[in-house]
Length: 67
Image 1 (cartoon, rainbow, N blue to C red):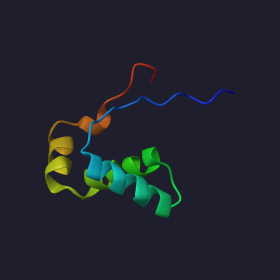
Image 2: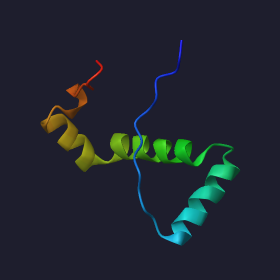
Image 3: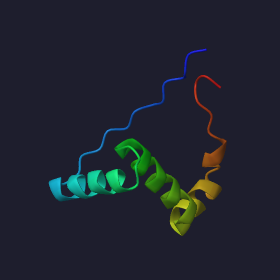
């Protein structure tokens, strides 16, 4: 069974942040994508404002087109 392709999000960052993220990913022995995914998940779980918005607007109930 073929792996389902994950959606892509493209962001632009300053060169200094790019170098820092790549260095951190290397030190953690993960990909840049893995590092950014970890950071996004941490933000969603630990940021009170984000959690309130998710709860208030039932954003955790959003389903994709294929679900």
